[in-house]
Image 1 (cartoon, rainbow, N blue to C red):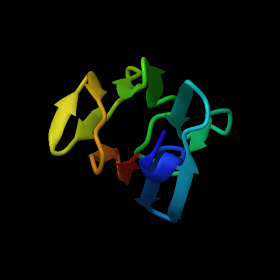
Image 2 (image 1 turned 45 degrees about the vertical axis):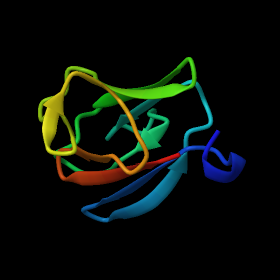
Image 3 (image 1 turned 180 degrees about the horizontal axis):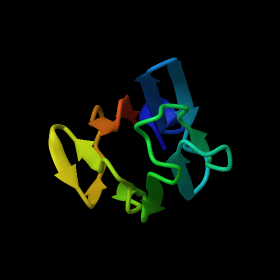
Image 4 (image 1 turned 120 degrees about the vertical axis):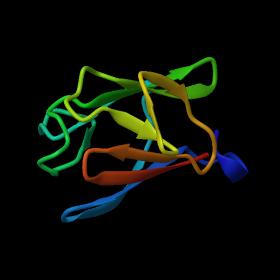
Length: 99
């Protein structure tokens, strides 16, 4: 549950995108391809770039073998537990995680 009982969100900005996505499923994929839960139409984002998972009430982001990696708060990560306000970079897309 988010602040005030809401659903956690991921706010995405990048080349031609500015959108907020609700994290409404326990596992969500992020990438450039249309069959992802969160589609980011930015060339530097891999087709299946990362996976978001809710494990015991905690949200994690995991690199899915992407070309440009997953960067959280300036650090390249393979898997990272997300906290309120974390800044995530996938290629040329920037995201903010909000509880």
